[in-house]
Image (cartoon, rainbow, N blue to C red):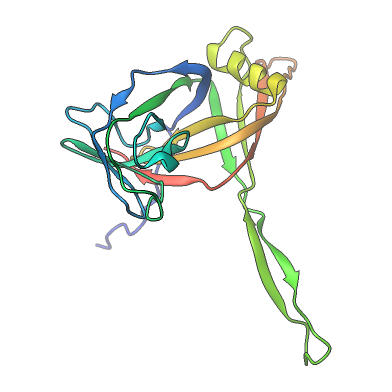
Length: 219
């Protein structure tokens, strides 16, 4: 009998979240930050979890980290790691907080898609080139789209509409069934509202991703 070699992961159970702009959680007091490609923060009895998005403030010494936002990529007793490269920062001296953003769960989603436009091409051909020569420019993080049941008074969809109106970026999180989490920052371009005979109110969310997507393995 042949073993099933497929590693396909069911999409059912995928959770989707949008940042509630202007609301924050309880700040975590930081007592140490390492200089590393991924900064490790010391915080006694912290409640941070992988996938949290935190903003730093009031750090003495390593002042470069103040105002920066990072994604928690790993946790341990008394420490948590963020995707901020602090190798070139001044050494930590004292104090500081890491304040988590608040997210609303989107429960009406039916499908989602990350496109991948790839990197831009640069023509580096010269007059002595034997054939066309190319290099790659910056990678384009692309767009995120999501089909959903349109519900006017749904808290998460109200936040989407607000994001469409204020043109301010939000953080988003996708939690997959296999415990992988994707975190990204983006601008809501559109939230449609459509209907049909014998159909349900439907909509489609379109987000322009800004900056890199962060993928981590949650608990």
